Amino acid sequence: MSRIPRIVILGAGYGGIMAATRLQKELNYNEADVTLVNKHDYHYLTTHLHMPAAGTESAKHVKINILSLIDEFKIDFVKSTVLQIKPNEQKVILSDGTLSYDYLVIGLGGETETFGIPGLKEYALNIRSVNTVNLIREHIEYMFARYKGEPHRTDYLTFVVGGAGFTGIEFVGELVDRMPKLCKQFNVDPSLVKIYNVEAAPTALPGFDPSLVEYAMESLKRRGVIFKLGLPVKECTPEGVLLANGEFIKSQTVVWTGGVRGNRLVEEAGFETSRGRVMVDPYLRTKEKDNVYVVGDCAIVLNPEGRPYPPTAQIAMQQGETVAANLVSVIRGEKQKEFVPNLKGTIASLGRRDGIGIVFKYKVKGLAAVLMKKITDLRYLYLLGGIPLVLRKGRL
Ligand SMILES: Cc1cc2nc3c(=O)[nH]c(=O)nc-3n(C[C@H](O)[C@H](O)[C@H](O)COP(=O)(O)OP(=O)(O)OC[C@H]3O[C@@H](n4cnc5c(N)ncnc54)[C@H](O)[C@@H]3O)c2cc1C
Figure 1 (tube, rainbow, N blue to C red):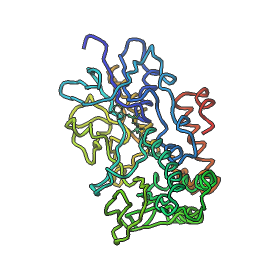
Figure 2: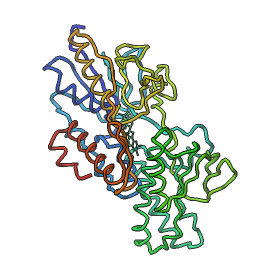
Figure 3: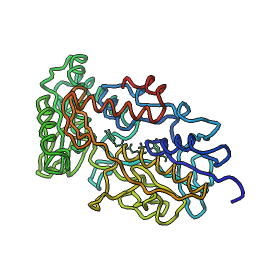
Figure 4: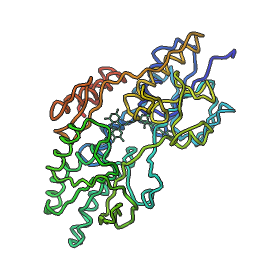
């Protein structure tokens, strides 16, 4: 390669933006030509999307302008949608052009997995992007407005959240916080509002510490959430959801949080995937092409027990850092390093004033969990954009 190597990063989520900002720091002048592609001109805090979805936070607070994070003298930003990845030709087809690369980083995030359940794709809403959560918030408000015109339609005030994993639990936590304000705004009797959380597994937050799960469920039940556990959704229709026991919940609002898969473009590119996620090698490269790296929700890394780590922002960020370091090493002819996750813990919010989590193996709940989550958020902003970004966005 006589010219300088071309690196293309697809997606400015947690993995992609971290890879880009680390590369701009580490690479010397003219060492590589780096291009970052993302379909929006902003990076968004996916881990906060449950708040604008419920309407407890404005969507503008979860967006960060990409140009405020990168140095345009070092990184080219292309606002475009990736349509196809062609690994054999080392090209990426965008909605408005084609990019060639020597090294590719795929960080296109996840998609909703509906497991083929009839009607979910057509009738359920999902928490995946700023646009989808704006839709949920507006839909909820519209339901209250419609109820005022048709007061016999209590299904307008019935909200079903499918999935009691992290996203589902965090979203119902925000919903129960929002409801009293909406009832007041629309002058609706709060006792008419029903919030169901339906989960196929026998417990909420499967795999989480049982005492913390119990705490979370008690906290949410006290605030009105009705749990339906061990009951898979059989079908979603325009009138509501059918559960495995034959029960039908009439509702005009079904939000599906029950599954995540990798981005379809990755499997369409011909890489071997499991639910759209690539089993990467220890350096985060695909087994088919050693110049293609995959980070975040599109990648699978196994834990010491041989099970995939759950897709999280924490892992995506760390992978972005490792890939940046490995690209610098490859370009300099040095040895690459293996990805070793450094898990600091997990915290789930239960609305604004409650939460649960494990931090460095210690259990936290209540306000301590809320505080730890805030610290985690501030740390991320600091890693991404230093003190200026913390000052600009830290009020979240
Ligand atoms: C409500 C919610 C709460 C969560 N809470 C937590 C939490 O508390 N802690 C935690 O660690 N994890 C949490 N997660 C999981 C975490 O957000 C994801 O694991 C993380 O966002 C994955 O990062 P990523 O870089 O792979 O992708 P993403 O952050 O999803 O970014 C993907 C990027 O690719 C762009 N993109 C997608 N398709 C295209 C295309 N075709 N062309 C161009 N650009 C494209 C998108 O616009 C986006 O910018 C939560 C997730 C949700 C939904």
